Image (cartoon, rainbow, N blue to C red):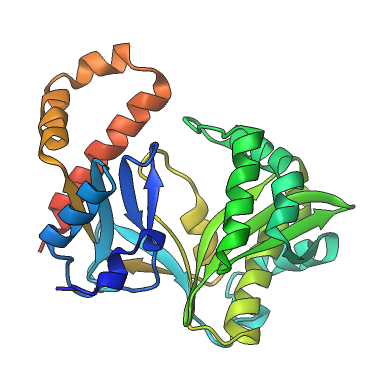
Length: 284
């Protein structure tokens, strides 16, 4: 069991749903589960309702909990097996200009790209322009976050935000404006980001986000075509007792919530139910 105090530092746990749920976003890959008492203390100190993390990293056993990783130190076009994907990457590199950008610059100029990206998703809660600006400026002050932008004819078509650790990098967020899909900005972005960290800077891996719980996307299939691989893990989940009891009661009234709750709130509730099911299915 991991007892390292640094694991529970505030920087390694990202708040969701107004800081009520804490998600582990740090550099360590846990082979064993976290101690429940240590997680419980952290949740209590931050006045949250629960926390989620992954363990049994890359266990090799297929299951419902996973992420995608690119860890090929020789990552290049010739390493990508899909002929059509290679063609899309070449088109993206030809049509787009991909380069690192300043997070403070993104704070001012990136909101329109975010808002247009949000039109692709159901149940997406779009932050206000002011909130986006504050968040990007806060990341700029952290020091370990970096940004890549994709321009098509001087227009910001896409961007990625990464968090860089000593040996790996977390792909924290990617957004793109669907109006520029024909230029294949995401193919160019993913290719340049992976090359930058794996080949140019010699990091071990680029880690993508975990399986989406609120809505299904095709990002996993896209990453596999880009030369990433699926990494299976187990899901650790701690919920404070009153919240777990409330969820048990809510499960009984599930059909009623489908009528009463707004669509986004219903999706959030279903996401928690799904997490509970995955935690149970992957439990050792």
